[in-house]
Image (cartoon, rainbow, N blue to C red; front, top):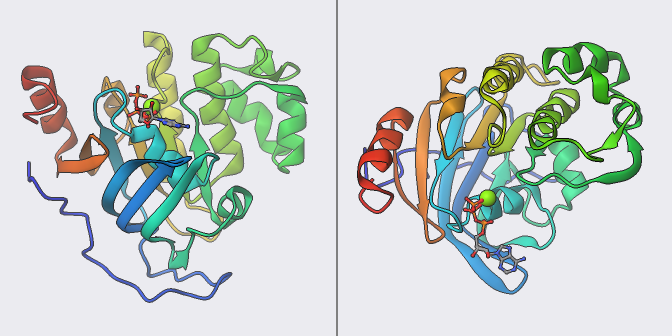
Length: 260
Ligand SMILES: Nc1ncnc2c1ncn2[C@@H]1O[C@H](COP(=O)(O)OP(=O)(O)OP(=O)(O)O)[C@@H](O)[C@H]1O
Ligand SMILES: [Mg+2]
């Protein structure tokens, strides 16, 4: 395991005008990025490059800034990229709104997904023009009993997590951000979630390019189904090490986060 981030800053691309996509560019390229929650700086000097087809894992103790990093890339209030450069397929995303980023191909499965009062799962799928895919995707995740319920209205912890993966499967983003997708999911369904994420990542995006992912996990259970290329360790808002995902998890289990 290296103390530096081997995936960082190895490729630099010239910024593209808004709307243009460079198929040869990294899917996500963060260089020296700081992310604030409101006025509080949480993540500092983040450099990370995810190329099409790559799955990256993000590890770190509670409160280290993992969800903040994903929220900053997605552009969810109150998380803001306050310095550095952040590009999605060559396009600068720092000034883009959350819906512009979603349209550009970023999708996120939340750690604590919100309740959408008055919006059923079926209506949500209809609104994002994914109704045709709903039945089969819901069946894959064992969620066909939820289709008429409002999104996250009384979903169990595991149902809410599986819904987030179903939502991503319906949205079909190019860059999939998953915040602890297996947390709270029972042992039988952890494999179901892993398989669904794996399926999503093994299919090309709408432009025919391989998808990429940044996945937060504490347990590493998702690695039983998911082929991850590299893990990054976030401590106090900084990436302090990057390396083989299983080796890093083993090191954390044995020695804790500081020594990993
Ligand atoms: N809106 C906010 N305003 C101020 N501080 C915030 C805000 N949101 C998060 N933070 C703080 O940022 C730090 C990082 O939080 P974050 O949720 O990113 O951690 P995490 O690594 O995802 O932790 P966990 O493993 O528990 O999910 C925490 O100290 C948290 O209290
Ligand atoms: Mg979190």
